[in-house]
Image (tube, rainbow, N blue to C red):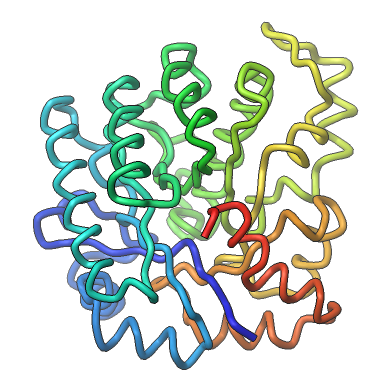
Length: 317
């Protein structure tokens, strides 16, 4: 079955100093393998897509990119350079690649303007946001101009993990919990819940968020989120139950969770129109991801929605 994948990463030598590689150490064979594939836009990437039956990959700068840059002006300049570079690569394979904008979220207005440029001029399909920006999260009211633009453009924001701003004591002495194993899940799920409980989707009810990794555990927790929300009111009341906001405004992808049990939970919790296939290339294997979705115990109609139908609708492909 034809597939669209939308958490597929790249970098350039000029950006590699920012990159995080899922906890792999620089100089290790795993790191070197990731680096080689991240830099490639030709044979390796396209062959991996072909073996998995992936028609289209939506490409994005690997985490955290310019969001780790302390100088706002440098971040603005480099984000534009990366987006222009990606646009040129897409023109070489316009039927195989699309793009997510890379944004300088150190400045909300600059990020909004760059998103507009990328969507309206470069024909990108939304943006990939790599977690917090030097400790700032997207529920801050200073980001309202950014969300206003997101809603007006009608494109989704894909919220991708990165390392936390600080190091919680509970992870001390357990390096195996770092990165994509667990810490990134906690960080990203918490960021998403800040958006939910911070009223972002009340203020911008048409805004769309995408979470990878089968929703960063949130599909499993909807009942409990509603139960505790009723007795632990926050500083800014929200208009809908958390589960309603998540079902209305958040989509999830299958990246990095090739488990039929997890897929069935996400489909049951969120609905068959809210789950999309992805790989997380090069950090996950395209063929493994393809075999997982091709063999999933769902109807062909649901499989088609997950593999390509919902992505075509959400990204307006």
